[in-house]
Structures are given as C-alpha cells and as structure tokens.
Length: 145
Image (tube, rainbow, N blue to C red):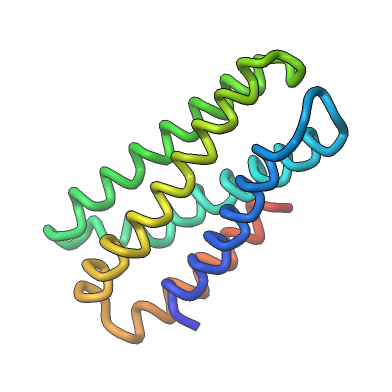
C-alpha cells in the first residue's frame, strides 16, 4: 500500500460520516454518534497526515505551499468542530455549522485527491510512498486509540 491509498481509505470514511451527520435530526443519539465518529476520524487523520505526509513533503520546495494550504484547511475544520462542541445539538445553528463542516470536508478531500496527490506523487519515490503509508497508518491507529 502507498500513502495515497492509505489516505483515501480515511477519506472514504470521512465522506460517509460527513454525509450521515447532515442527515441527522435534533439532539438525537444518532446525531451524537455520527458527530463523534466524524470528529474522531478527522482528528486522527489530520494528525497522522500532517506528521507523516505533509511534514515530509515540506522538505521539497514544491511541497511547501501545498502542505501549508492543506494544514490551514485542517485548522478551519478544527475550529468548526470546536464551534459544534460548544453548541447544543438541538440548536438550529448546530446543523448549519455541521453542514459547513461537511462541505469543507468534501472540498478538502476533493482538492487533496485531484491536485495535491498528483503534485506530491511527483516529489516522492515509490519507496517513500510505501514507507509513508506505514508511518501514517501506525500514527493514525495510535491517534484513534
């Protein structure tokens, strides 16, 4: 497995969880579970991706701006999750923020997969891609536990 395949597995879960979240209603157990799943997935993925993908890419001049942009989008998603954590799920504003978060997640993943992965693929050797996948998966699992 290479780093791009490893990241896409998490991306697929993020898309699924984000979609399920915006379909929930009110202060329900379903909404709580959907949000906690998305939040845990995003946080584990972000940390592992930044440590095991973006930082190594920043060693390349062509990887600096791409990495900075992606990390800034992670920060935006973190801020939206903080806002959700501080708002009652029954509040109509909660769903508005959850929809913004879902949209940002989908935008970020699309941008990564269609632009960033291609650029990063040119900077890394096949061996590096496999090594980074192992490192990412190890860090990801550590973050989830």
